[in-house]
Image (cartoon, rainbow, N blue to C red; front, top):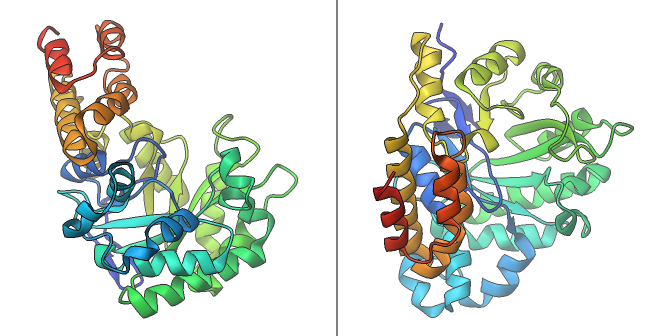
Length: 346
C-alpha cells in the first residue's frame, strides 16, 4: 500500500498526507499557493497573534478580513491581513493563532469567519523569545491546564462562528530535557476538543538545534485517538518516506525543508507512490521564485515584497551552481525588474 494516503481530521477530508508547516517569515500567502500547486495537501499560515488580531481589527466587525474590505485598512495592516487570507491556489488551509489568554483566542478565532479557513491551529511550539515571554507558543507546555483552556476556547469559537471546522494543535516534546510532557499536553488538548496533534519532537531549549527524536512521534501515535502529524528534520523525499514508515504518523509536515523548494511535495509524492523522484532544474526554481515575487508584490506592494523576497530568493538558490553569485546580487534588488535582470543572466 502506498504511504501517500488521505487524512481525515474531524469533519475535514484531505486527499493526501503531505503538509506545509507554518514558518514565520516564509509561509506567506504566495508561497503557500505555489506549494499547493506542487502538491501540498494542507498548509498553515504563519503564526498570528490572537491578541493583536482582535485589538487591531476587531473594530471592523466580522467582515473586516474580506477582500472587498481591504481598502478600509491602512497599508501596513493590509499586509498583515494578507497573512491570513487563503492563497490563490490553496484549496485547504488552516490559520494558526498564538496567545496565552483563552478569551483572546476565542475573539480572534471568531473574527476569521469571513475567510472560511478549513481549520484553526493553536501554536504551542514556537520557541522564539518574544512569543514565549508572554506565555504563548512553547511556553504553553509549561502550563498544560491553560493549553486545555485555550483549545476549549478555540473549539467554542469554531462551533459558534466557523461552522465547526476542526481545531488542531502544534506542540514540541517539552520545555527542556527535564520536562518532556508532550504526551500529557496532547492528551489534554484532545480532551478539550483538538482533532489533530502535530509534534515537532525537539524541546523548546533545543530550538532548532540537535536532532529531532522521531520515536516520540511514534509513541504519540500509539496514545491518541486522533491523527498525529510529524515534523522535524524533513529535508528530502526520503526523509518523508522514512518518517511515515518509522512512526506510522498520519501525515508529515515540511518546514525548513520546503523553504525555497516547493517541489518537495511533488517529489515526495512521486517517491511514495512510484519509488522514485527527479530533481528540478535551476530554471524551474528561478521560475517559481519569480512567480512567488510577483504574487507577493500584488499582495503587499512591490517595495516591501522585494525586500521580503531577498531571504526567499536565498532559499530558492541554495545549493545550486552559481547560486552564491545570484544571492549576492539579489540582496541589492529593489524592484521586480531588478530581479528579472538578475535571473535573465543566469
